[in-house]
Amino acid sequence: MLPGFAKKHSKGGALRRIYAWGRIGFFVSALWIANGFFASGLGISPAYAEDSRKGPGLIHAAGSSAYWADKAGLCATYGNDKAAVGYYQKAIDLNPNQSDLYYFKGMCLGELGEYEKAMEAVNKAISMNPEKAGYLYGRGRLGLKAGHKESAMADLESAAKAGDRDAKNHLNSFIR
Image (tube, rainbow, N blue to C red; front, side, top):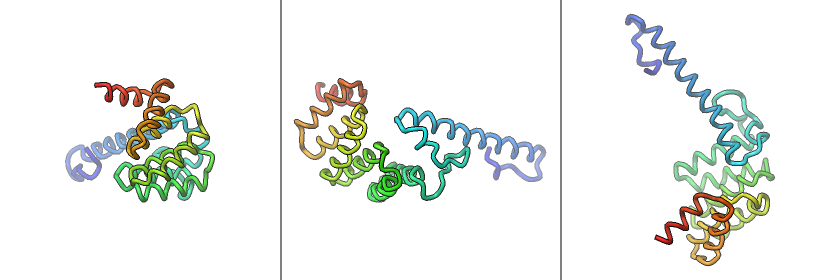
């Protein structure tokens, strides 16, 4: 039950409101903890993930690189890739050494059909962090969308050999 739904004058209403707020606090704390796991799983450096955190709830200082990256991620998730590209660029301007920002910007550019710019951004991410197989997979997908099948298949195969599960699944879908 959410806090606003408990009747003020019903028996136990105050207890229900306290219980509901406790559950919301637990949920926010769980998100905060999960963000650390997701950030480490993506290979984001702890300094980047924690650069301006204000505490539980994934709140970043307005204007920080993490703030703009989060905003870009939300835009991309909901299909506003044009805005996401702009926000990723703001994050890159503040933190140019973060390869994930270039990669995600490139993937958003690919969704917009700007394949040349997308490849430039993803290639920059790969040059910064060549051991990240997911970047090769992303470049392979961009290549397929752009019509460059031979180079795309080479990227997908390289990513699969490096252990990227998505690339393996993608290649298996071609075999079937």
